[in-house]
Every structure is written in C-alpha cells, then in structure tokens.
Image (cartoon, rainbow, N blue to C red):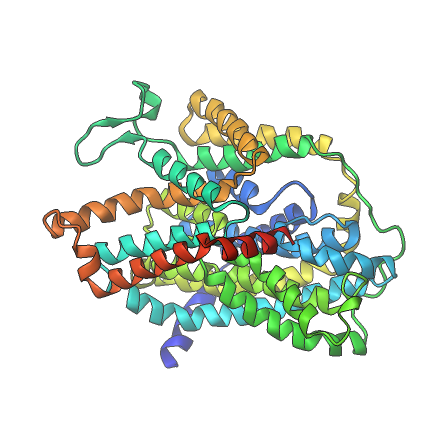
Length: 500
C-alpha cells in the first residue's frame, strides 16, 4: 500500500507540472471537440497529430494523446444526446435514450448524468489501473520471447473474436496487417522484402503514414459520401443537474456500467467498444419495465456512458503492462511510444516510472478537466454542431498532408496516405474493419522478433511453444477461443449481437 501511495505521489508530481497540465488540457479539449463533431474520430485525430508529438517529451506527448482518446468519449455523448448522431462508435447506445430525453426537454439532465457517470467511471478505472499495474508488470517481467509470442497471438485472436462482422474478414485484415509489417529491410539478413526495388520502402511502411491514410483520409472519403442531416435539439437544454429521482435511478447503472466497462476494456480487440452495448443490454434486462428503454430511460444513458469511459481507460492496462495494444487507439499509442524510442511493456514501469505513473495520474486530472470543459461549455458545442462538414474536410486534409510531410520530408509519404486512404475506404465499403489490420501491423514486427528469438534459444525447435507452461496455456486458450468463435451456432449468435 505504501508503495502504491509513493508511486501515485510520483505520478501526480509529474502530471501537475505546468507543461503536462497544459498538454492534458489541450488533449481533453481537442478530444471533446472531435467527439462533438460527427465524422472526426479519435483514431483519425491521433493519427493526424502523431507528427506534432515529435517535438514533445514522451510523457507530455502520451498524456496529450490519452486525453484526446478519453475526451472523445465525453464529446461523443454530447453529439448523441443533442443531435442523435453518435460522435463516437461507443456513443451509439447513448443516442437511443439520450436524444429521447432531449426531445422531452431533459437534454441538460441527460448531459449531466453522462458527465457525472463518466467522471465516476474514469476515477474508478484510474484506481483500477494503479492497483493492477504493479502486479501485472511483475508477472510480465517473467515473460521471455516464447511467452511474448504466445501472448501476442492471443491478442490477435481476441481482435478476431471481438471484431464486428465476419470472422473470416477479420482474420484476413489481421493477416494483411502482418504482411505489411514485413515490408522493408530484414534486420538480420539485410535482404529487401516486398520493396519492389523502391528506395522509399527500404525502411518499411511508416506507421504514421498507414494510420493517417487508413483512418484519417478514408474517414474523409466516407463522410463525403453521407448526407448531412443533423437533428439538433431546438428547445432549451435546461438545468444540467439531474433531479433526485433521476439520480436515484442512475446510481446502480453507473456502478454496474463502471465494473462492466473496466473488465471489457482490458480485453484485446473491441472490448472497450462493446462495453456500452453490453451495459445497455444488461440494464434493459434488469429493468422492471423494459418498454421505457428507447423512450428516454435515464438508465440507458447512465450505464453505457459509465461503461464507455471505464473501458476507454482500462484499455491502457495491457498496453502499459504487457505492451499489447487492446484496440486501434492503443495501437496508435504504441506507434507514439516507438517514435520516442520507448518499447511498450513491463520495462516502461521499471525503467521509466515517471512516465508510467505520470500517465495514470494525468487520467484522473483529465477526467476532472473534462467535467469542467463539458458542462459549462454546452452552448459552444451546440453551435459547433451546426458547422457543415464540407467546410471542415479541406482543413483536415491539408493538416494531414502537412503533418505527414513534416515527419520525413518525403513527397512519397503524402502520396501513400492518399493510396492507403482510398484502400481504407474500399475496405469499409466491402465490410472489412481496418482496426484489426492496424493491430496486425503494430504487433507484426514484435511477433516476428519474438518468434525468431524463441527459435534461436530453442535451436529451431517449435516444441518450445508447448513445453513452456505459460506459452502453452496462452496458445491453448487462443485455439479454444478461435474454435468456439467459428462454431456455427455461436457464430450466428455473435453476428446477431453485432447486428443489434
């Protein structure tokens, strides 16, 4: 307990530095803004802002990027409630009852419940991360290349199982990501792999180029193809504090949503995204009158919003302790860490404790900032919601091009984000999720590196993966998950859940 207190003291001393406070505030503000504006998500924004982090110290850069991620969860609920357009995928459920409350003149109460529930969930999730961080890191320090390879395989299997849509398509996207990660010069043999004789591919595909293209540029193309219909609430928003009855109805859903989101967020794949959907389903089943849901039930806002924010923050646990990204945003965080020469995993806590605990402390500070940013500035966000997308996308596109060119000063990088943007657009049009591809790309190099190390240490024997107890357990678990997911009855049930 004393160690935890001293670690948190170290974290707050780092997070409360003027520069880190300013970066946390900037991240929360930008996150709220992109959450509020439909069509601009945290993945695309973080991908676009990666070049800016080059000039920042690693702790400040990661604090800002983390603020953008969980700030977007808050902002997305504002759009869902006031406009009935989820600013974020995780806010889809909030729109069901949140917008119904707004139409009944309870928009302020819905926004207040969403903000208070998110703050409580964020606080609990921060304590959860702090409590689990040290034990998980100690376990991870026992891992060798064999165990790490098996752990990464399990992470990719989770990404397949929890990805929406077809399992075959999810596997195809992961394999594509693994394939793209092998482009470039082999570090051991010096041979060129899939470079087609082009010098700009000798160093491989830049992570920022792939992420910005597949998520930033393709997002612009997708949004240009959608009609802009914004059902902004015209009436008064009303008082932001919910009444006593609404608070009473919200307490249990907030607690359940927080626990559910904290558990789901740790799962690799789409755990954090599935948390609010699971919370909504649970609240509807537990309700004495399920017919209220979809017509303005406050529980339908309180539970999912708490699950949403808790899941967003606990998804940092596998990243900071094991070096495994739980979702596309965490894959981008891995990219930001490697840009600054930091290897994600247990070495972060032991080798850079100020970064590890500074990030954790900044999460609680960021949640407090978001409470202050969101509620008093609701009027500003409502005005921003009326800005048409046709005025936003040229600025976003110019920012993408300038940002990516500033990394390596190569015109080919600008062309590549256009190419990957078009590919990303086609993939989504045909029902392929790009997120598993990004996870495959990020884990690909680490997967290959640990596979080679394990085989060198075992003198080329593949049996090392089944003779070591930890790696054998992880591989068996991965195989069972994959087999269960492809059983026809379970697959049909899974597809129905995602469709709902």
